[in-house]
Length: 195
Image (tube, rainbow, N blue to C red; front, side, top):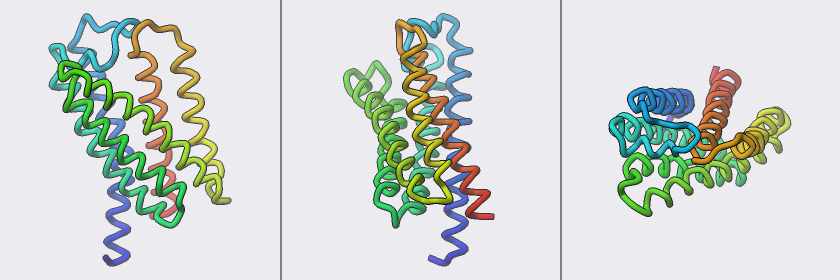
């Protein structure tokens, strides 16, 4: 593959890192708007996948997961010569597939829904920690690596510090933290590497 074609594909993958959270969060917000009984304190976000806005919610997760997987495959290419970064990016691919699976297997599908939901969040956290560690090892990207690790720590602490009965609040805090990270990393790589 020529360098120009490879560069163009990596730019597209990084653009998907910006689009994935925008689309996923927009669809979640739309599903919430169409579900008046939704309660942040007692529900899980996945409850939206079995109510009147199920198609909106589940479609948003599937589309967002596909875009996130493209982004993650781009990161696999970027980190192909760094073991920690490569493993972290590959783990992000698995997390992205799990995000799609949450939409494919809503709560009504049974136990598989819980498994893919847990897999998404656990794999996401692991992937960011590995990618952050890889970035810290690069002198020019130490701050980005520190930001990545702090995203996981701050998101985790905030998710459990905010009072809640259900899991919608920690799920949204985790989703927002990961979304900010994906946009910051994508834009930073686009500006510094592919300009």
